[in-house]
Length: 67
Image (cartoon, rainbow, N blue to C red; front, side, top):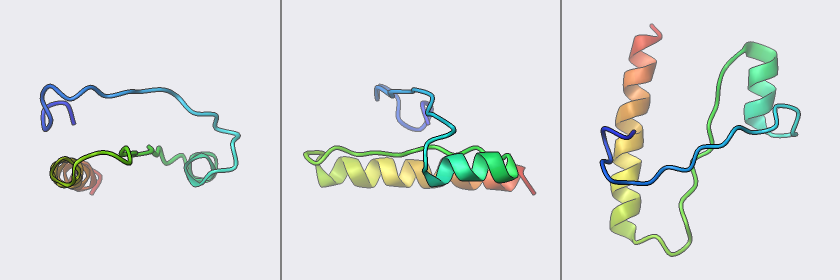
């Protein structure tokens, strides 16, 4: 994502695997890693579109590697 969005500040923090959320369940049941993607309420629509396209490109590359 950093290569797709140079200059964007990412906030990374580990989550509680035992929390009752989908990504924790998939990790414990299948060993599948997940991530939460959040955008602020005041984020301009253009920035949301840019981040959405970048995220989609990165996810597709990761899925291709998993084949």
